[in-house]
Length: 185
Length: 296
Image: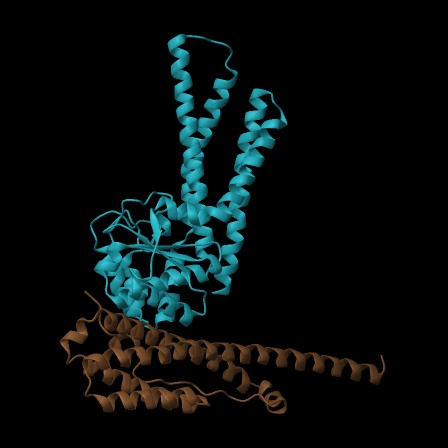
């Protein structure tokens, strides 16, 4: 076997290794994208709930105008958010405002007994718990992807092919257990 | 985890193979005794094949029927539906079907031959007696069973053992019936068919408990620990499942619609709430599971 042949074999193996690593990274990156779209679905559901919720509360608590305005504004900003970090900030803001709205509702016994409000509240609690689950799944996928990316020799190829670390998403106030609107017995 | 999935798939096929083998053996004996040759063997093989396919594709609906489960409506149990949808997102599994069993005893089980066909059933007692975090822990445990393909093996085994128990019962009865009739009319026309039925009856009577035991071993106790751990991985809150297990196991009442065949499917053995945790029990002791969860 000549020198050239050995060279060909070495390059062949190297090429296959690169293809393998590249494809793996693609798989992991797609998982992250998929996990993100799961979050997106749930966030959209929350955006859709907000107008109904505001309208229902408004019927009972007319003079809480400022709270409603803030919520609507926070919602608009959250919808417009482009990057993960921007989204994180906007969603945190929205969550705080939403929970303030629910707290406001506590002061109106008639509203608290309203069937529509109760349904919306349950829907909101359910959606928020789903956001929390989706976030967990997303962060797990990000960790798996980032770990792959940082490992040797993947890190050498990642730069060449333009793979970048993804950001984790932290939305506060959605820790599922204590934050729940309580429907327990 | 992937190992557990591979093992469950392999054991499912093994179970079906053994099931067919058993039927063929019975058919062979039948053919030999009656002199019908390979006809009995062929019939037995066809029946076994049919039962195998039947239980592979319909075992989940059979088990749901047998336990009296009905589909849960979202209007009726909104938080339950929300919980399971959330858990599905958290685990990356398709959302399983949700079923309700009308029974005051808290318990739950999962079935389905693959994650796409996954079903989780809970009793009304579970919904009433457990709080939300605990229910979520239980649902996550069941979804871990689905993810690991425990449900395929366990449900398949439940239906096959059910079929064998039924068959052996039928054989035993027809044997006694025949011998009774024979002695009353004292009509002796050669010992042929009676002897065959007798041999088969004895064979089945011996095999049925062995098969039941096999089922218990197939649904090994390790699975429960694994599903507990995987379930806690989904909720990130082991304490929920731990306190749920304590509540379920402290229930003195038995589940109405559970049978020996379906018992291993449930999260906590529906027959023995306390004690009776010997080497052959289908579920590991609750205290062990709870302390394992609390150590996480």
